[in-house]
Amino acid sequence: MSVVRKRREAPKVAGMRPIRIWVPDTRQPGFAEECRRQSLLVAEADKADSDLGSFMNDALVDLDHK
Image 1 (cartoon, rainbow, N blue to C red):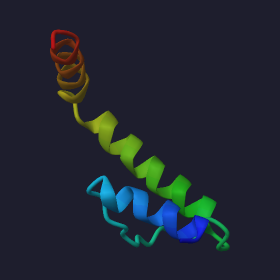
Image 2 (tube, helix red, strand yellow):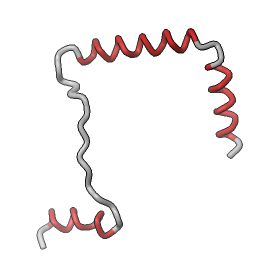
Image 3 (spheres, one colour):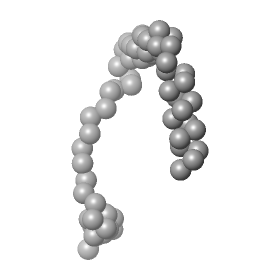
Image 4 (cartoon, rainbow, N blue to C red):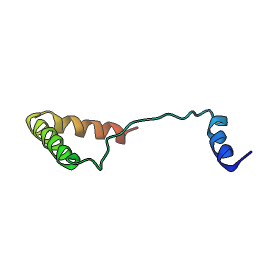
């Protein structure tokens, strides 16, 4: 059995399976600009949500107690 085949078989034996996922191509022109645009939209939405800060603090406290 080849080294590559052994490496591929080990996770299968452990109960795992391979998957293929598609992710954005960070090399595409305009990628960074689109990230910035979306980040600014999220930041503006966060500013408009007056309950978000207390929700996040409550969630953090909840995590600390587990």
